[in-house]
Picture (cartoon, rainbow, N blue to C red):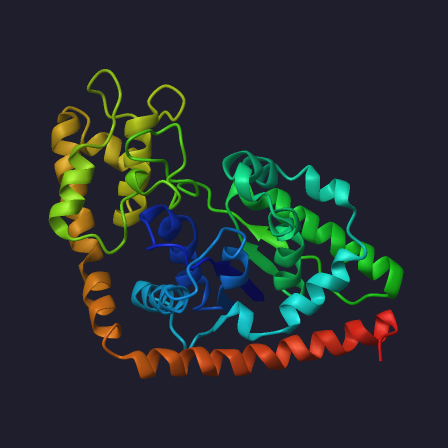
Amino acid sequence: MRVLSGIQPTGSIHIGSYLGAIKQWIELQEKNECIFFIADLHALTIPRDPKTFPEDVFEMTVELLASGLNPEKCIIFVQSQIKEHTELTWLLNTITPVGELRRMTQYKQKARQFKKNVNAGLLDYPVLQAADILLYQTDFVPVGKDQLQHLELTRTIARKFNQRFGKTFKEPKPLLLKIGEKIMALNDPRKKMSKSLPETCLYLFDEPEIIKKKIMAAVTDPGKIIKYNPQKKPGISNLLAIYSLFSKKSIKELEKKFKSLGYARFKKSLAELLINSLKPFRQKRKELLTREVYVKEILEQGRKKAQIIAQSTMTEVRQKMGLF
């Protein structure tokens, strides 16, 4: 099956992004046709410095490769280098009701968060996202629960197009993680870990002393019992989810192991696990940052492969819509 996902070049990858998306990408690339891209066009809905933006894109590519994406097993490219993304966005705009866009939860949140910059891109973001997905005849999209609304709109747009112009697009299905798909903030386990709030994050490439400091300071809950209960014990439940996903041990195993040891022992063990687990990532990133030509060649090869698929889709779309 063909799987597609993208990530914005807006800051370093944190463990929430890794566990909720990239770790899944790495597993999917082993048995599927995977397409992953740096979503630089999406990132422009918030003002970016043109002088540093190319460097942001390069560093995100390095971090994805250091995290485990293998260019021999998947396609990696930069979104803006395939012009068909923006062309298909415009064409899909002509069949997408504005009311559908205005009801998107993320648009409402972003409009409140960036009151001085409520641009048309924020409203139209889901249509560009739909174009990203439909352009490559995608079967499955790895998503968190907060992205399900956007993916459902993509499916709606695909159906509308197919009904009006004839069968053209596949209706992509979501791939969801059962646990840990939404890693919460270390300092407030009621909120999602987010790059827009750096103080909430544990980054994938943090140095050992930083990892230990952040984990030991992470918010827990009243009492000393280590039990997974996101409603009553959100702090320790979040840390248990992180421990489980990095150690590949079940929540029940961890609850039993740390049953009477207390929060401090649990946190110390988690910090050690993370320091050791993330060491290969830190080393790989440092190596790749010195190999700029190699990284750019990976992106160029990815662009060429993605372009072939995108052009094929757009040829059919233009014909169906009566464009010369």
